[in-house]
Image (cartoon, rainbow, N blue to C red; front, side, top):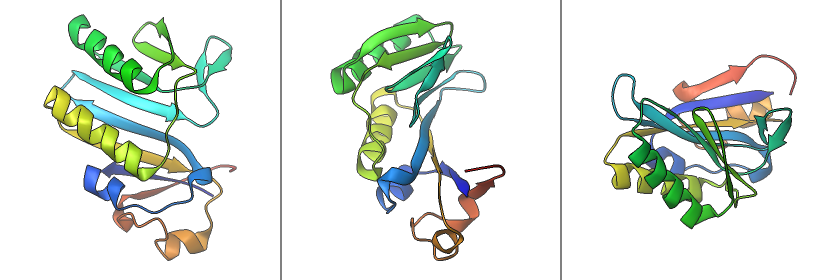
Length: 153
């Protein structure tokens, strides 16, 4: 089964314990205002760009000034490397270092929150999760933040 844990705090991420091979996707959503936000994310199987997936860290933005977008690009490149590709309101760091462990995701969320003085929330999605792992709370996330995803694994 697939399951998403959403609206997670930095502390909840840092206290998590999960098998890294089951992470399918993560996102750090950064809220500037009602309409102004950006999200840094990663997909295990790559993010669609035209017809081919791009592997690496990516982000999207909405109503964010170009100065902040450039600051975010510079920060992420310094941390993860990669080749910058832009498509409308999305930026891809093709070939960048990829992370999926709780420590590095939590650290990134904390650094972004501090750097831009904004609140963040984290979402993690897992694949091939057993019912026992969910029932036993093996990943150490708050049960109320679990959202099963319907469909094939």
